[in-house]
Image 1 (tube, helix red, strand yellow):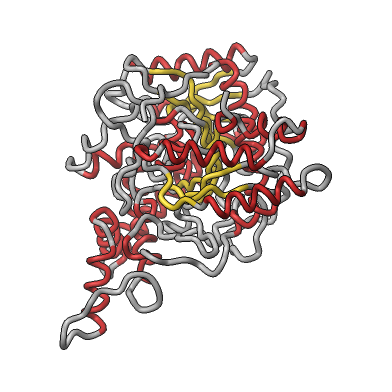
Image 2: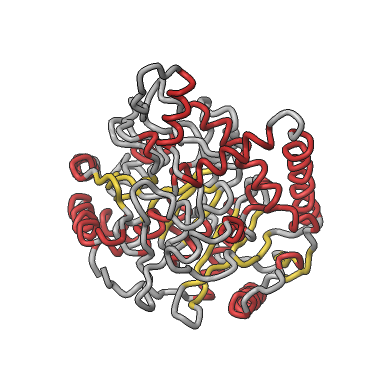
Length: 491
């Protein structure tokens, strides 16, 4: 096994035993990144920074070294990194190099992590297939025919890089499923923490009441280790919760006897593929075999989740993206003689934003406009409260976690849905958006392969602030499923 194929936990142990140096580990990843160019996962490589950080990690090995000392990670292009391009995969931020570090990357560096570079994503995190990026499509390392498959979105570059062993783990962000859906499409683990568990400061905003950063890893144990380093209160983020961060790794006892797992009847969608239904049934059996009690529950407002999400998220996006106007930073359009400030705004935004971002900004501006605010935005907010109440009632009735499919299908081909009705693409988020609307933690765990040989995942949804319990349930599911398949190296 090459060093870049290790999990965080195994690499940590090898580093501690002196069998491997951080420089060796980093070099193995940099070599894999060079070979992985066809995947278009890394869009800003930072080998000099990585090797400097690796040498520093080797120098401080031993007592006092952080939990991630010497562990090479990929960072989604949505996280601001000091002096390194951070452009949210958008032409409007071309050339932008922040003078500050996001709280998440600061915490990772304090824990000793090594940054290999920045990862591809959908523009401003708006997309489910990584086809809206100014860098071009990221490509799924899983290949079963002559098509190039999507790695999912918006954290598609993160998912592809972890699945292809270009890095040991990566950061992602999740606004409506952007960690969990790509994790399911690429056969890795992805967790969206409770809203407020991880600081949003220094992460380019999409929809501020929905966005949450989280880990994308090769195993549930790695997710626990990485989340422990990312999480914590941040006074710079007013939505960050001042709640202690437990030892997530220590919570992986593998014992869920007597725990109640809810199965929401509303997630049995009409037209659900038989393979997804069978996978879900298998997941229920695996958890029951581990001693959990399986109970049917109702989340009656689920059917309104997608419409509510696609009102709230674009509304917040139109407000957040108003700052990209060509005045302060980023792209500024070339102006003609006689052009005024309004012309500059219009030309800059038309040139800088891609079609999907423009679509969502226009939808968001419309639903917030006078005459439509009550009809759309206010109504969506009320629906969101009802969706949250559904989950609250299920948890109040004693449910410890909820099991659902992660995606309505396995990965589809790049270009296959790009020109279709955008609503068809939005339906990829059908199982994941409720979790963001309710502010809950959710995790995708790879459980099997479909008939074509592509990975499929199941989602577990946890109680607010109970990432520890959620990770333990996921650990049991992972162990029972025994998913060890990796993509064949075609690139």
